[in-house]
Image (cartoon, rainbow, N blue to C red; front, top):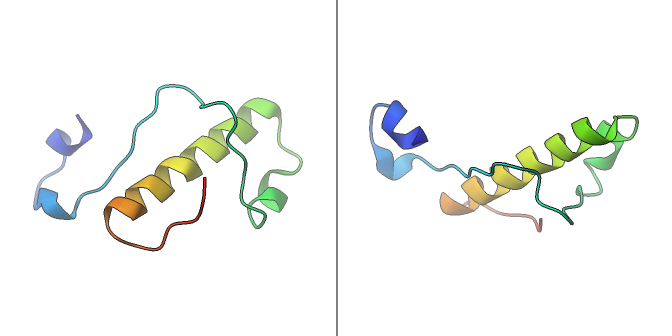
Length: 67
């Protein structure tokens, strides 16, 4: 769906969608300080968004950390 909204070369478009926060995801060590004082809902959203970003970067062939 997202790709249908964006103009241009779709070969250079990467994205990942999830509709809920997947269980068991953990932040990377360098991300932990950014959410150390966050409420659980915000913490889970942050971790999920970072997870999706890493998937999209992997689709583009860029270095990918573990999720």
